[in-house]
Image (cartoon, rainbow, N blue to C red; front, side):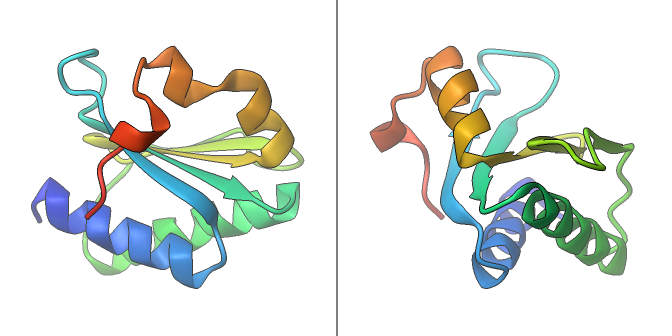
Length: 114
């Protein structure tokens, strides 16, 4: 499945599951580890785990293999590595603290929309 289609599916799944402030960053020219980062705010640590679980299950349904999670079980930042896409699910406090959009030099108004 093409990356653009996966991004749309991930965005839709996060939106349906009440993920907030979804940002999709094209970082292919900034790093070799991934092409896109999806950043979403969760309402709690439990919600962060839940969002990653839902996306993971959706990827399994589609036959997309992924290495796994980082930061599960009581973390305010959960990461799901989908190879060409890395999903960062963060509580509002963690997102404000780490400011990944700023770190990757992508102004919020320049994140892509699908």
